[in-house]
Length: 107
Image (cartoon, rainbow, N blue to C red; front, side, top):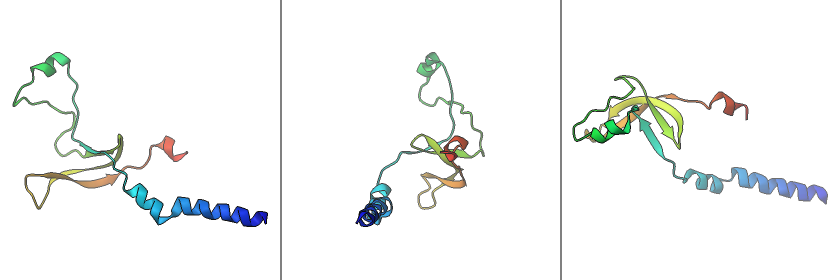
């Protein structure tokens, strides 16, 4: 009798972890994706002087890969490309998938 209840508990646990319905729920969670072209640091006084047409130099150079960030974590790197269907839009062609940091792999 005890074996039946244990196997039933295990079955419901497996259903929770691997069921298609639960996976679908996870796959619908929205995430924030950002492509980081570069960054800059400046004093507030210089920031307030910026106007239309001002150029802010970034720390990335032309041709360097851009970071693809999901919910604050770099997950990939890639190259900026022009979207084929609409020449007025940019996209990112992924060139590298970034693995978890060394500290996360031990968890």
